[in-house]
Image (cartoon, rainbow, N blue to C red):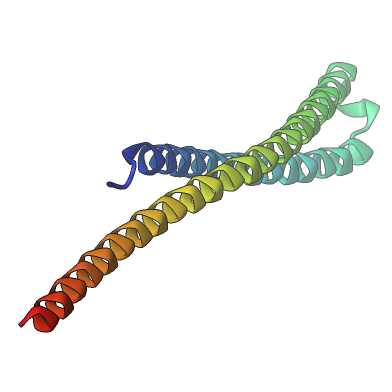
Length: 147
């Protein structure tokens, strides 16, 4: 009796899935950090330009004031887009976490099946060896009695 190779193959496959999901989670966390940094920079730029807007007067020209307002509106829309991306990334992280938990459970199940199969093979071998030793003992006993 041999250990079935299917369990080790399935366990390796499950381990590969877990590694891929963890790598994808790491990349997504880096993306989330990058988006958060972008959000902070945009907020800082908006605050700086808002402070300049207070200082702008109509003496500098109506077109300069209008351009400044237009830029601030663009910063606000960019801020909203980054916030939306952050929300989507966080949702995706939750999905990845759920998938990782399922994959890890599957990997543990495959590992348990492999361990159980190895144990069954070892028990079978031990019983066979014990049977052989018992037979040898009986032969020696019978031989000693006959002599």
